[in-house]
Image (cartoon, rainbow, N blue to C red; front, top):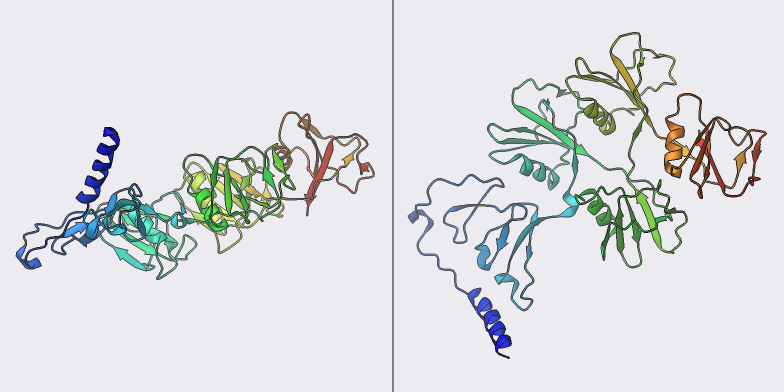
Length: 419
């Protein structure tokens, strides 16, 4: 009984300590506040309105009576401590948290800039806060930023690296450029993946479910399942290539979608003559691939890269073009292109005696990928046996006279490339 009394007394004391009056004496001009502080997230005023104070950033304490602990920066919300549910929100403190929907994926930082596309210039802020202010911008559609670390200047812009004013390297020293990469999601289908629930979230929308997947740092989120009726969201690092993937789902009411990740063909000594849609200097091969993905001025389907001078050429052409050369007529170039195939629905079928390549112990998704990157023959179809995870690649199609539906051997699934 004594322990209970002490606990109650301590709780009441804590509540009492949070109830106090704010005392602000005299006008602001009578206070010597000193030099304004250097703040990563911008300046505001203290609780009395006399002196400058720093806005609070992500994961910093905030709130309290009259916001005496601090005010969250633009785009952040003070998530209040619920330890004392009966305490008025006015007296609660909390932690500044980001709106998960504002989280984006950014391209690798590079020495570049865009001439005369400064929608908003901000002084004396950190690089991370520069990104954050781009994400929460409502006056224009912010798509990129330039940042100068020496003077902590941030330039926000609705232009991207596809702009005709984009300059790489930048004509002015000291600037770093990055732009937003938007995630692409596959069409929603009646699928699910058994026993791959990395994270389950309750009572959120489908869009919020996608946003949570995009900002995950505890695991590499690649897909989600969503139940509209109970607004339940399941995040997973598994994809439709998993052996546990079920289509249709064995439980009704679930919708499945996954992140569309571009697959690149093996790099080879090749090039395409006179199909240079965009040439970029002094970037890595990984950055070259990223630039291809974020293009919106043309449909980027391939790239050529020379490692000696870090030159990148983006193109809408592919190896099917007449100007494709393998090997390349100029030394030092490698070629790769986007593999993005459409597969016919799986069916109980097979093709007799057309096994160009047999691969053991792989998933159905891996089987498809092996077909897509094949260069020893023109792979057009696959047969897959789920029980022993055997994959058969073939250049034959369902038009072959050897095609059998249903298959004369049980357990085989057939699919082929469409188009």
